[in-house]
Length: 456
Image 1 (cartoon, rainbow, N blue to C red):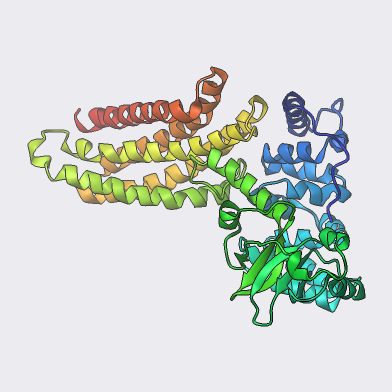
Image 2 (image 1 turned 90 degrees about the vertical axis):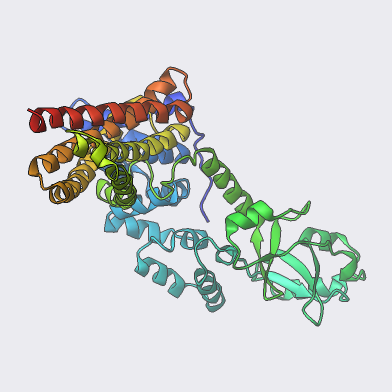
């Protein structure tokens, strides 16, 4: 099991200072007077997790090397899942081996999808047959299914049995750490549950049926978030019965459901962003590929708008082609900027975006904008050149989209941060300002170049 963090977390100001100090050290490796990163081990697991969430891979690697290996799992459990995936990819074979020597059942169940397969297999090989069977059963479920977090250490007993008889059965299998006792009759009907503490307080001659509390069971295939939102906990019960096909097969910890509900509440708080798979410093190649899918989708709708405008082209005069293509430039800049804005807003909401790492995020977003701007700009330029039989027009729209993408990335990163410093809600005002910037820049470059090259 992961041990509790012995070091108390610091306040937000101290975390900001830690981030700035680490960035300064890693950014200037040639400065001999700067200290090493060894001091970060003096900070809490929560502080280290916040630090890893707030920097890119360039900084994560040296930070990971200085995190004590016996605190590795504790820090990983505090990271967002995608961040944990990226951090595990950065670890050396020696660090992975160190984690493997300290791995627990909850570590396997939480990170099985992103851990090297040999670590999972080695852990299962070292367990007793019963534990291995239960683990394999849990891993057979989808990552977000209730069954993934199932505990099989429950005792099913007839409601007619006496408390003394139930205690005898418990004592015969002391090697199993039972978490709950459930009353199930001969037909498999569930009658409720009771806690172990309650059993030890009862008269041994008391029928189990008199100790049972009616409990609500949840399905093993149910999404854990949905289960947490729908479930009504019973007072005094730390474990929730789980059923499959009408049969009670185990229990899930109430704390697991509440933890997922807390995570979901935070996601709802900052979920103006569709990028639920991207953390603040997802590697450039991964993030660019994820966003390009939606940029391409937007491209199709943008050309549809241009086609509709083109139906009325005869009514326009000399700038008909420019008028038809204007929505493409505006739309591409707007959607690219909104993606950047969403990531920045999420970073602000989670306190991961600060003055000290703003330039890191800006650098990442400009690289993504350049990649997607050049790629999609070239594609659009080729289509436009063929559509209007004009290489000049294709080149104009290519340049406009590239520069508008860069403007969108810059403004989408900086605008919410500046608004926050001005005590203006960036979630409300950010998109308004961003749209204005992308429209003005896009139309100015596109129509300006068109006027110079096509109408001169």
